Length: 108
Image (cartoon, rainbow, N blue to C red; front, side, top):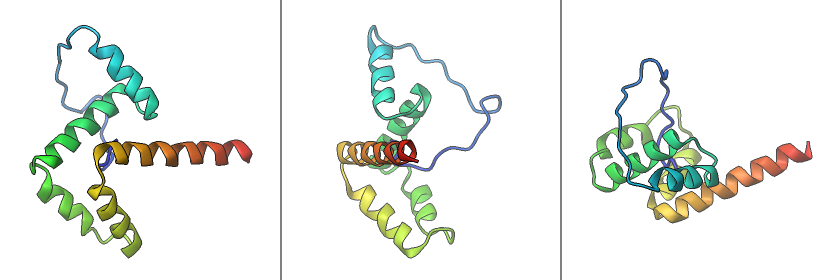
């Protein structure tokens, strides 16, 4: 996760959808979410977005964000390179960055 834009929404106004999970899947999602330092909801959303992106469903929306005037040239380059990584590589990079951020805040 989340290789995609963080959603900004209120839990009161967000669309809700009940999903019935097979036995054991909830625990597996919870474990993966913990490893990625995310809530279960954020983990599920990130994985759905990644799948939709890989299938080309979100291409238009994502390319618009890449062209956002809010992004610097370096941010655009990072985002393009990040999107070229496999999901496993993206997750590892995010975990590494999160770990480094935790270490830096612990030192201060």
